[in-house]
Image (cartoon, rainbow, N blue to C red; front, side, top):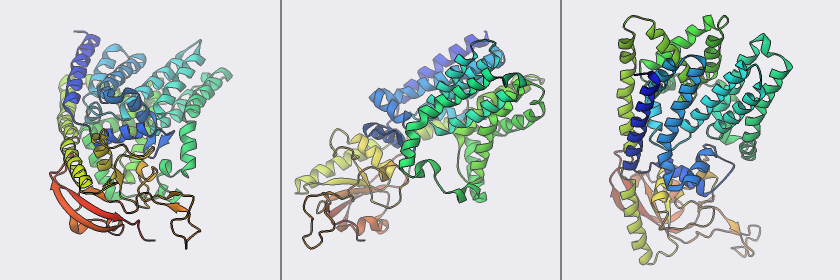
Length: 490
């Protein structure tokens, strides 16, 4: 059977299987979070660009089924890129090997930004190669490459790391330093910058905190103890044999980069993904997506090296079979991420109705963290209608802003009022509409560990009941009745 036909058959089976598995999954907290972001539109979010939320809002309930289709699109984009710089057989096996990676398989079952960003990034590389190789109409290919990269950055800012690598690769060739090619590169850079502008303006309005994630000083602060934890995560995401093999072939490509244009393309395009991934690992931060951007080209090189050896097929199976095994464990974890939340939301719904009937007018819901708030809000979206711009379930008030809940309106916020709430305190004309109201608080904290932000803000906090652990976490969930909100003391 020809490699192309084998790939088509495998993709049909894989996509059908993935769609079937998605239909059996419950919504995960991450997917619920994107659904909530879609209901409160913005140019960007604390967690990244607006592409995933916009896609979720456009597809509605079908957004979860987009993950297997993005996996299919990324595989076809990988096949097209490798076929462009190599041959069809290598491209088919590289595309199949990409589908063996645990990180790819897990993302293929959950709606998220990684696979859309990877798809458009691979298309940008394909179009960039066409522009590089074109004798005529190169400008059109540069425009297409810029558009594809711009779409990738709408899902993940990290995709922009490919831009300088593509420019460097092009300018390394003397014949591509002509005015036409330089103009093409400028067009290529302008298009994604223009598409990214709204997100950058939004980040600027937030003092760049969501995008930067730290200060200038943190750029050279390393966490060597966290490095080993992050390294274990990378080995799990790409499998213990594949990850080091990809690093080895990238390092080995340095020697041939000057003499061979295809080897130079591999080395330079993979440079930002590999380099930044290792840099963040040294800081104790996981950046698997960056390495995933480099993976298709590196996998192609690994398979090329293996096929040149005796018993190449045996070596390929030995290398990628553990990746399949790790993928199975990853898929089990993906399934467990959505388990139990629907039942927990049902219990919260019953308690909400019960306490409201007892006279708890204006009862509202608080969760211990953002994932719990998002997934509870998703399952209760048809039962509770929050004020415009508010989430269905709030996160406990805090000065820490580490996700979008810190930017959305909360129950601790004051709103403008015509008359001051206190006649003796006229400087403050705001009022809190949640004053005097009761709340249900759901978290994984036992009664002794309820945070001060809850205890100090309510007259009393009473334990109601515990629920079985959800989302694969064995820790039970606890529900508390919080009476008479008075706001946190200054």
